[in-house]
Length: 89
Image 1 (spheres, helix red, strand yellow):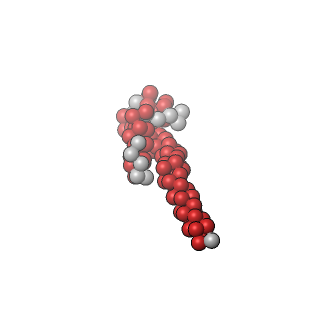
Image 2: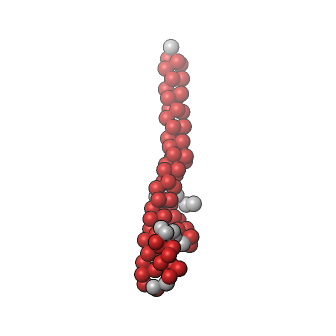
Image 3: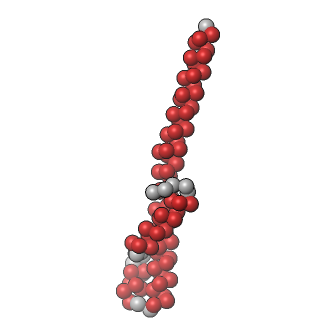
């Protein structure tokens, strides 16, 4: 009877560890990436609008009006956001 209680305790600990590992290595990074995609898009769009206003460039202004963004600005913002969330890449 004592061995059964020990076995149940060990199984409970293993399940808890597996649950934590799933959360830490799968769920948390996926949620952070979703948030970072939205944050990076919004930040790079705002940055493009600022660049268009500073340079008075028609191409930049057209892109800003179409709600587009520059890829290098997006990539930098995305990497910074991931770093803030504690995710390497």
